[in-house]
Each structure stands twice: as structure tokens, then as C-alpha cells.
Amino acid sequence: MVNIPTFENALEARRRIDSWIHLTPVLTSQYLNGVVGAELFFKCENFQKAGAFKTRGAANAVFGLSGASAARGVVTHSSGNHGASLAYAAARRGIPATVVMPDNAVRAKREAVRHYGGRIFECEPSASAREETARELAANSGGELVHPYNDARVIAGQATCAIEFLEQVPDLDTVIAPIGGGGLIAGTCLASRENATRVEVFAAEPELADDACRSLRAGRLVSVDSSGTIADGLRAPLMEMTWHFVSRHVRDVLTVGETEIVDAMKSMWQRMKVTAEPSSAVALAAVLKYRETFVGKSVGVIVTGGNSDLDNLPWNLR
Image (cartoon, rainbow, N blue to C red; front, side, top):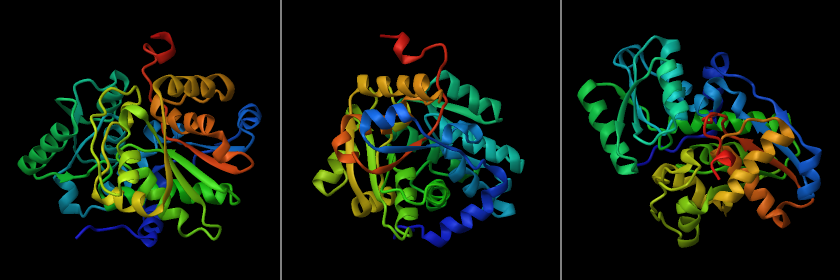
């Protein structure tokens, strides 16, 4: 039986993590509004603690643990942002954090995990290797396994982002966010279902990691090899708990190419002075590519994080 989080769980999460996270700003761009023909509002989680929305779910999981469970520490797997966020939350509670990371993880994200005191174990860059290694470490250490997205505590924490967003901009027609494992999208669906205007939720993902799009079309979970996309935070596959929300509440999953991701990222840096990482730029890339879907609407775009390798920015690698 899957433990599906409720809206009340999200409200509890908000109270629990309030003192450990930032209320992130919402920014606008008249230039991008003109390009799309819509009113765009950007919820900037790149300004969040640890530089990503992931801190919300991680903090909810860590600060919701009993004293006995917390004392044994926490374990997870992550391409970077969830790992750094869990290490941040664990450090604030004074407990150890162990993070399994693929051996091709972005250097800046590895450094962030270490900065917050997390212990890193490397593994092959595959979802199965990450899952198996994390389970083994948790079993051997007795630490609490905090899955990066297939976890009710994490989804409830991520829902606080959309709850805030809908308070900051109450007349949104649509919210769009990137999708990898689906924790943020699941939380966004959870929050939007309680909104009186029934905001539509769209997800955006790379063409090279399009399992969510294929799954929605097929009506069942479909797996793909997603190791090739520049959007490293979106290489994780959907799982049962996040699929529950995607299959029931997501209006559509829009896919974008690698060049479109880089161009959107560069536009955010240039036009908005927002240091979005590649995974974050996928949502704007989808709005730009499928602008006919959003024209004339009030569109909320969640900027999920800003942890880029500044020595290897993608437009310098072309």
C-alpha cells in the first residue's frame, strides 16, 4: 500500500520547516512576457537554502524524525541538490548524512554536499545503482533512508513551494515545473488541487529523459535511459508514488531538446539575472517551445535550482 501524502501533510510540513527555509521571491520579465504572449511569474527556488527547492522536502523528512531515528542519521541517493539539501537539514539537526552520488555528478553539487557535512559514496550513473547502493548503506548503518522523491514526507515538503506560489500570485491559470523523479510535480499537484481556481499543472522534461511523457501517453510507468541530458537533476525515473499524482493530475508533459534547454538557461541569466541551472531552465524552454499552449494566460514557472558548475557553463561548451 503506497502512503500517499495529503494536503494536511503539506500544511504540517510548512509549519515544521518554516524556520529552516526561505520564502523565495517571485520575479517577472517583460521581455519574456512579450516573447510568449503571456504573463509569466517565476518562483525562484534558486534562492532557496542549498540553492534548490529540494531543501523543503529534505527538511520536512529530517525534522519529522523521532529522536531515536534521527540519532542513526539519514541516507539518500542524489545527483546533487537533494543530497546537499539533506546534508544541510541533517547538519542543522546535528545528525550525520550519507549521500550516494553518481560518479559523473556535477562537481559543484558534490562540493555542496561536502560543504554541508555530508559523506559521499559514489556509484555508477544509473538509477538502479543509486537505489541499490543507498538501500545497502541504510541497512548496514541503520540510518533512515530518505528517498529523493518517492517519499511521502519529501512530497509534502515540496508541496510547500506551490502553496507559497499560489499565495504570492493567487490568479495563476497554470503552473509548470521540470520533472525528473516527480517529487516537485507531485507536490505541486497536491497544492493545486486545493486551490479554488483549480490551476492546471504542466510538467516539462528533456527529450533525452522523457519517461514521464512516455508514461503519460501509455497510461503506465515506462522507463528510459536518461543519462545523456545536460539536465542532470532530471535523469531520475518516475516511481509509484509520484506516478500516482502525474497520472491523475498533470495536464500534459512537454519535452524539449538540449539546445532549447541551454538557450532558455542563457535567457534567464541574461534577461532576468537569474542563475538557473540546466534542469531549472527546462520549464521555461517548454513555455517558449509550446507558447501557443500558454498564450494569454497567467503562467507560474518554478525555477527549481541554481547550482551550476561555473567553470563549465553549457554555452561555453558548444
